[in-house]
Image 1 (cartoon, rainbow, N blue to C red):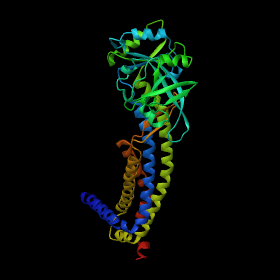
Image 2 (image 1 turned 135 degrees about the vertical axis):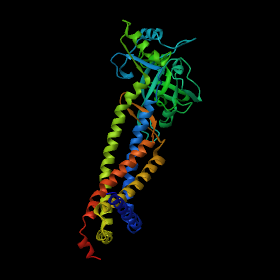
Image 3 (image 1 turned 180 degrees about the horizontal axis):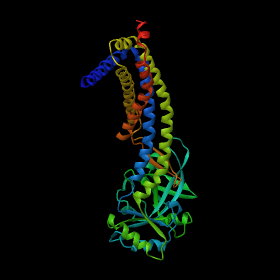
Image 4 (image 1 turned 90 degrees about the horizontal axis):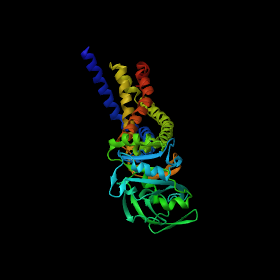
Length: 400
């Protein structure tokens, strides 16, 4: 029994080595198979890296001790309305971090303005956020990299680095016109690759009258005394009969917002890769049938010498998997070199505004692409392998 198993594996080794040595005789069809798999994997990884980059940007926004307070029932900032009394009560609530200047809370407005994209010139929706002075403490990862902060009470804006790279007209010193009002760009900020990098900021008290918002806001962002103070704040606001508010951690809010776009990109990317994969599988089938046909005599000779059909099947599959592996590795490398870190923007369907982000070709995505390549090789090689194993020895030997 043991010797039979050992012999079976020895036969696999002999036939597989023979296959690999003769691959130089089948260069053209082998290259076609590799190129087909390479294209599929490159597209598959590149498209999914877009979803991964968007998800990472959204998920990395916020920290465990940062919360957002909105009107109860609102699923985004766009549908929330808060009044000044709400803001005051939130600032006085238990669990809010405080400094010598008062509670670390920022009541904010969120409006949409139009700017042309640098790449296409087409107009896109860009978020303009009105914030209060404590906003810089709420988001302590934000730093000015060019120019200065806006001055309270003036029509000045600062732009996130992501927005400045994607949209025209956001250079320091430029004057922009929206709804008959002039705004001067006075600074560029970096928010560590978070959603805020896609935004424009200004003084909330200036934005309110210009956009006819009265004394209303849409969201209050606040820093907690500690991550564990979340439940205490939530309970304090829920028990106040004057309020009808909902509290959510900022990181959870943006992670949930990313799901629609991530699912859409992933679905479309998988569909496109699946259709391309069918073509690559046909290419692999043709390549392996060609390989079997060119080796018909040697396979028949091996079978006549006592080699079993199983080792022949494994050897043909091994060649198909090797070609697919090469294509998968090359495709993954092309996706990484060509797309990793590439910056673009897309619509966040929750707020109907643009979010700038970078493609993220992660090791997990490259590994998934290689696995997909091997799957294509397996499917493409199975039928030619079975044909080789069932090849009538007598018929094949007649061609010797």
